[in-house]
Image (cartoon, rainbow, N blue to C red; front, side):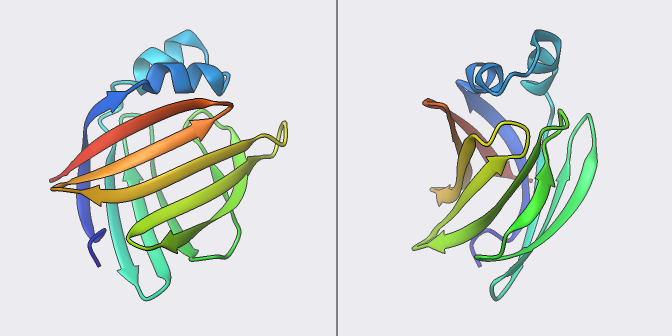
Length: 132
């Protein structure tokens, strides 16, 4: 699948504003904007294995399309939700466990980049990754 491989963050759009909307403090926002995130994705049918490695943590997540699972953000925010595949785009809807608000995310290949988009409380952010 097109998502397979290792992706290293190249640049962000509106990421600090997104983190602010999520309630992340200024110091963590500054650090988060320069986390050197690397994502390794392996797909086998409707099952995904995703390894996220950054300056802060390394975690491995396994999920099946359409099946809810629990996930914690780097700042400790706990979510529950699921990824689905819509055309060539991975689409997720997560609900925060602390306040019930919804975080939407997508991952899609645009040209030679993996573009990850977040939407929370009307604030949209994008992170662009290059193969590496």
